[in-house]
Length: 505
Image (cartoon, rainbow, N blue to C red; front, side):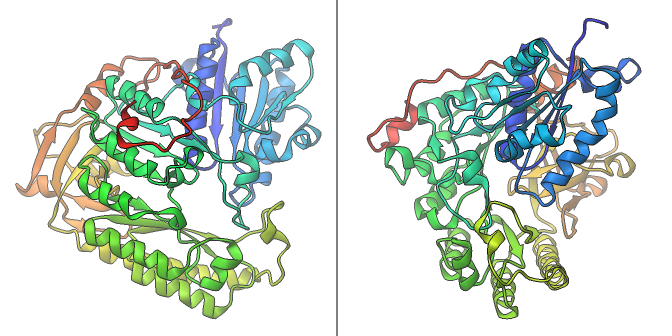
């Protein structure tokens, strides 16, 4: 055990960060490190040799959380000076050398554009006996070229673009992730095919504004064409994407979703506010009428679609009338769920210096009213599904109470969380398999399907995803694939608009 070097990657923030952390884990394992969590508890060091914080600058109190975590590691660093601590992600891009000033026991700081530099920076810090800070201002190599340690054997993230061209006044992401950079469609489809060949049955396309894909090569319909091309990949059972921007959402995407069987009937559409006045102050280039029109057209073509959203309460200058508009749009939209946030100042954003910051007590009261309304809507929407049959992609550890309730859990096609019972002596599905069950109860935040207990629908369909999960149960980290090498890059995107056949190039 003395020669074994371990790592621990700790992730804060969005799906983009989760996917970046898979790259960081892949890089460290390629460099000879072993995941601390993979070691038996009886033989596991208290702290890894390398601890990496992949940070987020969007969430509230991101600074306090980072420095609190770094402070907790200081005693371990004092006991073991050879231990290394690295900070990456959006906070690193934003604060740069400030991190080393505030926490001089940190060894490496790297930005959002150079996660591939981590192993070299660790080596350099170890050799030079000083902190190494490397922050690139723009993306030089797309992250897909890096090795990856995926979290799942049967589901995977696929980045189609990075960066953002919008200027929302509450968001610091564009200054940290840079302008949008798109991958060539052929590269994306090649990566998806490689993942399917490994047993992946579900992929989620990622982009800061995923539906603006194609901006670099001048085709505003490129995203719909990419989705349609995903429908041609044999063995790919589920395709999801996050997050689109309402201002760029085109009707061809709705049509493709309706006509492509493996594109799931789930849509995350960030509203942020229902007030046109607040949307303008946020620099969100759509208004509530346009937003509601998108929702109506989605439901017209995809009646069973589950639509989720993001909402911000208490943006500077928000009046009670503005908030009432948000409540009106939320009730009309019938979201299946919502990620609801209380506005808080993000240094470096235009909104941070706006007048009429809303008192905390007012924000809290409005927040509670909004959550109560959305919970009511979510519950009613889930109750409406009672008696219907849903197909669930089985997942490990989705349900916190699965052990005590003797249920398993997973996601329906519309991405609702489903907890389902097993019949006595019946076929037990594996993570990655599909199970058809009847919904017996719609709770506010999930569905319960106990149909197997009284002779109702219960059918297990074994999949290549379940095969992949089962094959990995004797791996160092059960259920997690080995590190896969990065996808080769085939150059910059084409300058001509992408035609439909080019998606398969």
